[in-house]
Image (cartoon, rainbow, N blue to C red; front, side, top):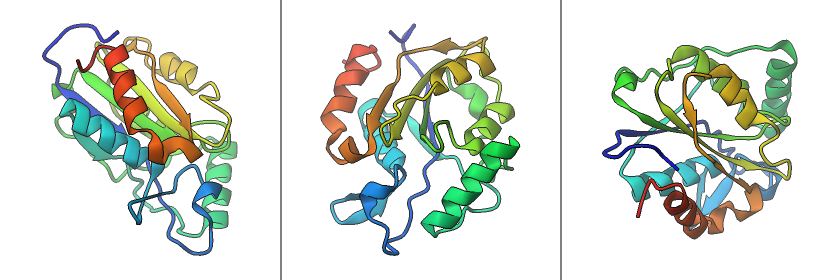
Length: 187
């Protein structure tokens, strides 16, 4: 359950939707077609959370954009993972201290969070904040990422997150709202 009331909610998410360049939406945990429009699966989840909670949304973006072609993006993500690279971020949340509940969303890439998420946790002080993770994946579930976040942010309160297979994201709005009620962030 989310402690306290009258929250200032931030929904920070990393999402890299790939263009329709011959890659089927099902082949990427980061790509989703909703009502005929391309969006990131995590972006869609963030939108549902934002609509339900009234929280502010911000997309975590890297200073150097990822390639738009799937294989090149996957190769770069894997190289960052292998080298422990925390890429520079273009995103700057000037009023981060104003928020007490931070939803943190990401796809699972190579069985972990995208390395940009590690950059995000490096950049901000989560002391005293409540962190609520959410993710999409290709079958690996959390892949230990919740433990990674808890280890990086020991002075924050962790609340049970929501992780779903990428193929279920387009139909996930009711499930997301049910989870938000279960954790006590909405009625």
